[in-house]
Length: 185
Length: 204
Image 1: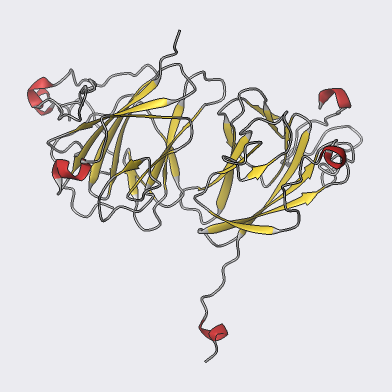
Image 2: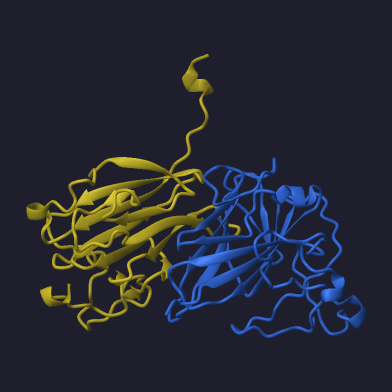
């Protein structure tokens, strides 16, 4: 019998896809340590930290405007559910973390929606979760966006704004259209 | 002026091994705002030498509720095999529950009562550990108590909140009980009455 036939049944993995954009990404190399398009497996019990300090953070941004530890992601499971969810926590004392329209201060945390925009400083991260079966490990994948996720309206493209300017009440996105300009970033 | 730290008064009891289960437990442990890991492994911040314990069994995670200036805590189960009872609720791997002022936790034969004294610092928190010579929790499941059930003769010995200086000491005996009427905590939760007497059996 071949090892293929004897092997453990493969489980699908929960995957968090993160599309990154920073206005200075080409000039300053803020994402030079990020391995784009690579799927990385991580333990489900691991707290994944993002920030500037490579001794503390799993994913680092080469930017002195980023806090040594900016934010963390960790998985949890709702009661009687087989689905893993992500929780995001702001670990920066100086910078707010904005998840869709929710502003998180230092040590505030919230459950990530299936698709959401995370912003801090000039950074934009579109986070999209794909459910999997495994409770042991999950995957991350980074994609580099060549253009602003806000200006190009990529974030809201699946939720078009009707002529009256209101989103559908069933939308999981912002309840009102958001106009952004450079001063707000 | 230094900001006061939140203190977790943690009282421990083991159903079969007694105080020897906690020989490595310090009397005081200060920790930053990362999750405090409890388990058998070397990665655990609070290491308990118990064979039925997972290398990482649970974590105590500080966080801040939106709009609050104080730390809150949640307890998350990190053991693939074992479970953790928290305030009458059984949680399994990666499930988590927020903690209130007084919390009853049971795992791997360990009974743990966590009483939170809130401080204003958001930099760190402190765990003060105490050993109990007698059981702390009557049964793991949630229980409702009312005036009829809590007759004066059955008042439980509540956990001493005094840290034992210098070494890990035992709690005061039953004669050192406090007023055990249901207390409204500073954060609005009704404190849980801790019952003596336990049939730990095959808990987690």
